[in-house]
Image 1 (cartoon, rainbow, N blue to C red):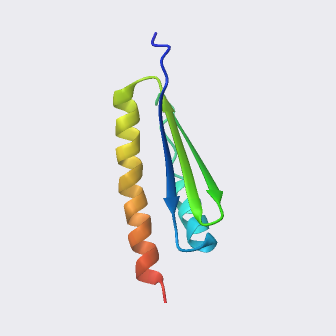
Image 2 (cartoon, rainbow, N blue to C red):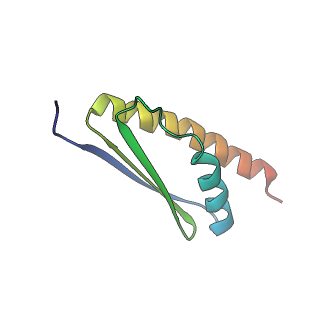
Amino acid sequence: MNARQFRCELLLPFADCEEASVAYNTLRVDTEPQRSITQRILKVDNEKLLVSFVSSEARNLRTSVNSFFELYLLVVETIQKFKL
């Protein structure tokens, strides 16, 4: 068993607290699969979305981060479409 822990921490800025909350509430429902060895934690801090990934394997961490960014970009594009 690998005792190493691989981490990725992201600070994603939004225009305001409301946009950060919308992104948080949208992205938090898409959890990592139960068989995944990667843990993802989401938090909102004012207009920032804080995302932390921890995994015992670099390959799984990369896959989780890439998947997250695909969803994140979709959320950002959707927020921009519905802005007044």
